[in-house]
Image (cartoon, rainbow, N blue to C red; front, side):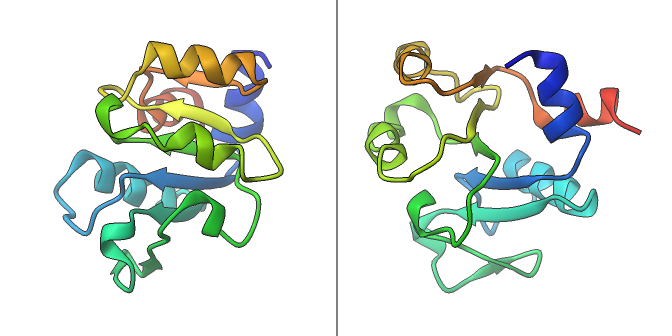
Amino acid sequence: MEWERIIKEYVCSPCKVAVLGATVETGKPVSRVLSYLKSREFVIYPVNPKYMGLKIFDLDFYSSIKGIPEAIDILLVFIGPKNQGFLLDELKQIAYKPIIWFQPGAQNPQLEEKLKELGYYVVSGECIMAVHSTNCR
């Protein structure tokens, strides 16, 4: 998949985004990105088992990616590499392949390479909010 196509079909056209590492702490970068995308009409699924039963910006938290009730287009990864050990196994348990987007600070070259080998499209080190605000009207 080409970068221009990702921008046009997913970033500039509101899609379904799971935010792995979402938090109830609204001052964190992950929460600012989540709020920004929600305000641009993206369908957002905050994912963090620590906050099950709670909400952020009136959105329910999910404990895992596989618990999201519909296919997502993008999985935004905000958790650091040392906490990503479960991710590959969890992705193998869903029947589709979302774009895996490693936000700045979450990059993991070894995992990214494994995901690419399995046919996932990977974006690494780009902030989706910055990409949206620069490229979309």
